[in-house]
Image (cartoon, rainbow, N blue to C red; front, side, top):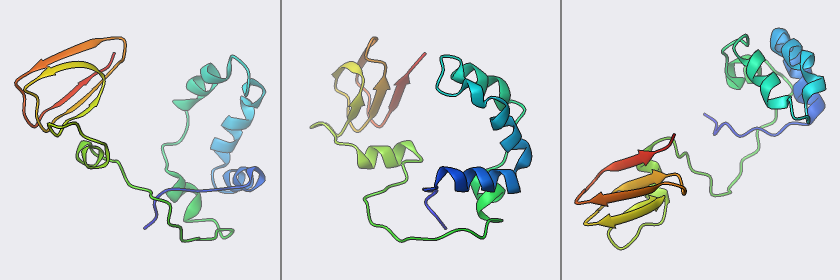
Length: 134
């Protein structure tokens, strides 16, 4: 098992892509002139739908021989669920995690996420997730 944290030299990952995922490497190469320009985001979005749906683990790491594993202790945690995020984040005196522009009354043990531009008003909830994003 790995945490999915990879560090590469640019040349190494490009070579691995060309070797193990040549179609993906070709797609990146075709839009390379758009990198670091105002058109980069649009170029990546337009080619994304045509890319093979494969993870780095399956597409490269399982096939590549030029790999080193280094143990590390750096406080990493998998925040793959709302519960793990709730465990990780600081809570207010009522046990709430609030990352939003919010007014609350009688809110307990809940998570509130939202845009800072929009006010969220909550009354009388316990053990809820409130998420508001456009």
